[in-house]
Image 1 (cartoon, rainbow, N blue to C red):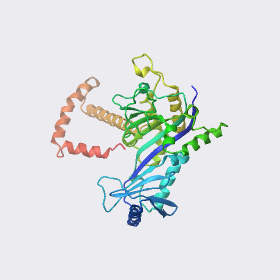
Image 2 (cartoon, helix red, strand yellow):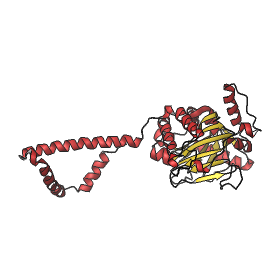
Image 3 (cartoon, rainbow, N blue to C red):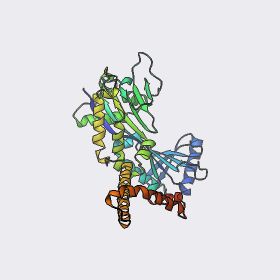
Image 4 (cartoon, rainbow, N blue to C red):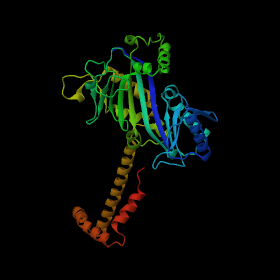
Length: 382
């Protein structure tokens, strides 16, 4: 296998903040939005060190961005709020993540929130999406839908163009595959070269050529597909994984556990070398997939804690149950001794004493449901 890694890193990251923008910022955004509508172009507002480009869209809020290396900022209008919607949404741009990583994104977020005077605390943050991508120079490769081994029920889409989602037509060159749902986990394998040409994203070519220059290699001739074909393997995680399963909320959670989330996802989706074996789980992994898994694991090794939050809670719960069981056993032994019960009759004593405990429970002035609920509130495994 002859494949060259041109780039690896985060390609998407989205946060929401459960807070309202201040009245002063609301007035500034409203005026900028109205100006954008009248002039049919974005209105640039300078707030401290932040240049905010405000658009005319957003029926009940405001849409703005801080450039290709910043983020798209969506603000809900506190005077016309949408129920159950976050006040602020921040969707970081791919170029900013590619050049600054998580640290740069967090710095931009905090500087932006301070410059705009938006008050918040860490518990109001919610991470809703994270994408990690690796770009391979591999002109010989072409995606094969049958090579994807995914969990049952996972939707797989094969397409022949950057914006197409239909199954490819017979004889067309496959330009990409997409498996899964973005709200949960999704794998995308696609022709990145074609995308940057069609969408004029030549900044990626600069990134690729920069990586080649560091290795003493010449720049790519983007016009020659046979020597410049770049395939992107991109793994995307949504709120079901980040918030529900791994319980990530804020920047510290991302730094501590994002590697665990991506590592877990890579065990559930595979790109393989198809064989005649009907058991697809036994198919050997494709060489590019092995390399992809290695790069993700290596790049995110510092962002792993090696355990799920639910595992920690379960361990604490099990230990507490063991502790209480030991206390119950000790009490039964003491109760048996007081009742002159011998060791040979101990097990029978326990079985018979359960009925006495049930009668005691029924005679208690406080209903057992209320007492259990109170105990459950006392032991919250968070």
